[in-house]
Amino acid sequence: MNYLKQFAVILGVCLLGEGLRWLLPLPIPASIYGLALMLLLLVSRLVKLEQVENAADFLIQIMTPMFIPAAVGLMDQFQSLRAILLPFLVINLVGLVVTFAVTGRVTQFFLRREKGAKK
Image (cartoon, rainbow, N blue to C red; front, top):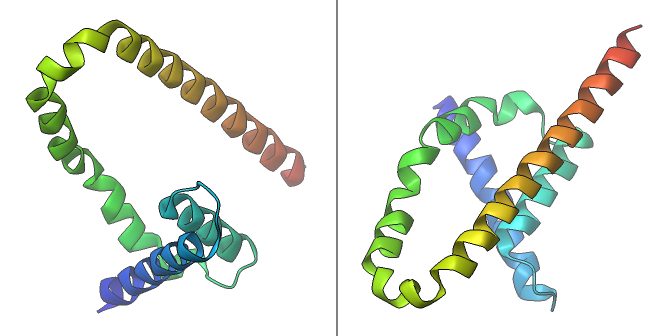
């Protein structure tokens, strides 16, 4: 039952993200609104980590199989992608490196901040 409550909280935040996407005329995906909203709720402690932690851990564990349909779709459209394969790969590799760099820097920032707060 605990998982159901946690999933309900996560899905509720996702639904609010969909609502924000519908209300605001910005070209931002609903999932980004949902993530930002969840971050705000967690930081403000309106939603406590314990209220979503187990369900979120489960979703992270099953994340890899969730990408299988997208990978199969890319394989199915390979003939269409062949003409733009080089730019496609370059964009993806640059995006990957930038994502790694930003993630690493943000993680270092928070680790240093946490270490400084413990002193």
